[in-house]
Structures are given as C-alpha cells and as structure tokens.
Image 1 (cartoon, rainbow, N blue to C red):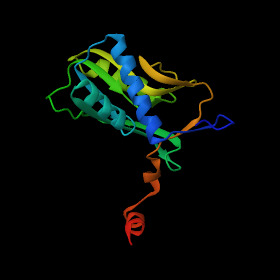
Image 2 (cartoon, rainbow, N blue to C red):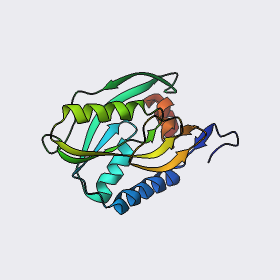
Image 3 (cartoon, helix red, strand yellow):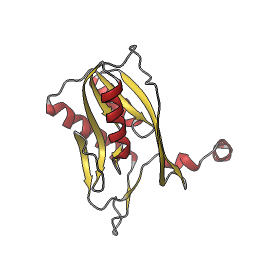
Length: 174
C-alpha cells in the first residue's frame, strides 16, 4: 500500500510473493532461456530463491552491501563480494541477475560491470527486480513495478532488522 504522500510503500507478505510470481511470468513470457540465477544478497535472496524453484535452475549468491547507516536507510559505500557461491563450480553461460529493487541503480550497474568484465564464462547476462524507482540510473531487463515517486519500500520481513534473540525469547515466553 502506497501512502498518500507517495513517500512510503508498505508491502505485505502476500503482495511480495505475488510480485515475485508476476516477475516470473514476465521472464518466462520473454522467451529467454537462462542457465543460472545469481541473486544479490540480501535483497535478492528471497526473489532469487523463489525464481530458482519456479524455473528449476541453480541459485548462485553474490553478497553486496551499501545500506548500513541509520537502520539501513542511508546508502553508504558499495561493497561487492569477490567470490560467488554456486553449487556448480564456476558461474557460466546465461545468467539471470536478481535483486529486489533498482533504487539508485548504483549496485546493479556496478555488479553488471564487474560480471561482464571479470567473469568470462558468462555468455549472456540479464537482470530482474521487483521494483524500479524513477531515480534509478539502471534499467533492469525485467521489472514488475515502476515507482515514479521513489518511495521508501517497507518489505514485510524488515521487522527482523530490529528483532534480536532477547526479543524473540520474550515474544515466545508463556
């Protein structure tokens, strides 16, 4: 649900999963065949996992991080892992890069550049996200929702960002 001022988008678990399913349909209907899904951790892990199951393709993981300041709301320096975790040796062939959103576009642009220049076994690379913000400098190949007001997206699982083991113990104590 988008707030009236357009500054916040609140997404339920059901809507989140529906959007991933719509992303899968877009990818499928494009007719593009791919060999591996490479998700960007953390935001692309959930969509990557679901797409991996739907398309029955191996899931590789590359860790990136840029949102660390002020409870993850301020973008800092981008860190990209040097290694990709994959169940099939080295990542190769046609790869679908998956993240949750194209916000500024900085992360996706940098990762695409790194993959194209440092991973010769990748023969074709396309990108897929749930949301693309208007301010993004990167245009993914596949996206479900375009967000012209650039809202802050409140994803359904972000409550875990402020929930530690002590709070869980209190929650589940009878």
